[in-house]
Image (cartoon, rainbow, N blue to C red; front, side, top):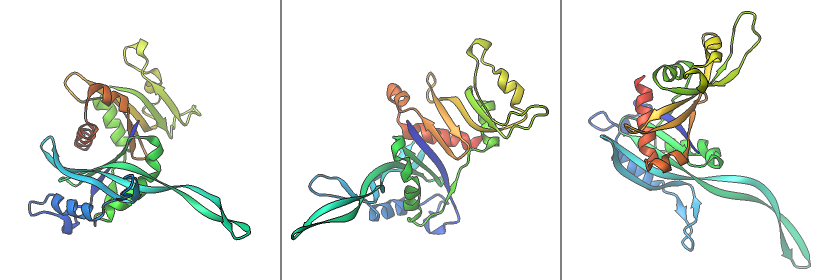
Length: 252
């Protein structure tokens, strides 16, 4: 399951603004090359944080950079034993590992960060820090109640969660529910509570071609999910899907 996050770059960053007012992808590309991850020559294993294979390309009609990004994590510490003359000494050693994220920068000051596997999400703060080290400031795109409600109104939704419910003579504060397939795509729970609470999660069908949909899940704390298997079955590039979702989301 791919986990994704949307950001906007503060467009006041004049250093990275091109003459046409767009984000200067050439400068961004050069900076990413300078901040490349390093590897061990003997087996190509990553041994230093940074960007990997940034590529300038187009998604639809939009100029973008797509890149991998490697960050270091820790599994904690352990004691490693060493011979020392006639004694054995223990040294405290940190168990390190490297994971990777996928990054998209667009000429319209958009940034998408996504992880193909949930185990890699712990590297999100380091990935965003590496992007900001290019000399830019990232603003989170939050999926607040208002945006989630617009999604609910404009797409075929199938599950939702409401929080902070305030309904007279009802002690319910949080409720999760799905569309009742037996009741013509409606939800009795939604009818009862939608006016009294705040949306914190929405799951909906998102069109990626004229004939194909995938299920997108959005959460209030500015992250979303898309099933890798769905994309694999449809042979669709996740970069294309996420950028289309970002554009549609911003247009609501």
